[in-house]
Image (cartoon, rainbow, N blue to C red; front, side):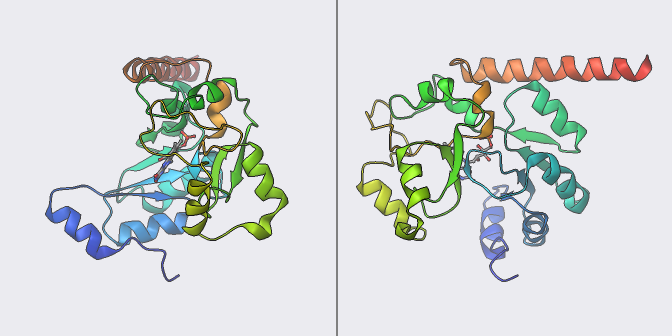
Length: 229
Ligand SMILES: Cc1cc2nc3c(=O)[nH]c(=O)nc-3n(C[C@H](O)[C@H](O)[C@H](O)COP(=O)(O)O)c2cc1C
């Protein structure tokens, strides 16, 4: 299908400068096209993910992408992963690693508008929605009055990138370094995945990585113990 591939000339230019290239993939055919264009790795991102996302769930997508391109490039799993259990499960599905987004927003290091991190801590697993209200493209975000408005008035939606301009001008979109900015959270753009329900506090990023690694090791050793019993 036209337009699916990653531009080969861009990949070539990055490679010439010693830069590895990865591609976010929501479907098997995205991964096949990315590898054909010379990408060095692919991220199989399920619909659970925060941010621009597709419709296929991580559990179903990852093994299918692994089967399609896993013999050619590393496959990274993403979407709804937030701890060591998710890392262990991703490895079991054949992934080479994980790509975690939302969990790292709830760290002291993340640069966000005031209240975004606290909103994640208070969120339940069904507190997100896929909305086109902030960028014009399907994006999983914290459900709020802004997403509700566009759910009820889809005829007002502009396409990408015009809708991004609409949300920015309305003061509903401060994505990017925005430390200390006070935003109206009833309309603010807060990308978040379905794993947000598991976030109970801010944890420094390095501690978080260590916790995820430790827990994955425990899970994997428990599971290998089960096999021998
Ligand atoms: C605040 C935020 C911004 C994001 N921005 C981008 C982006 O600009 N480009 C991109 O490819 N993915 C983006 N993502 C998606 C992440 O790269 C990642 O795939 C996703 O967060 C993984 O799912 P999880 O949020 O459930 O961990 C973003 C995610 C979040 C939470």
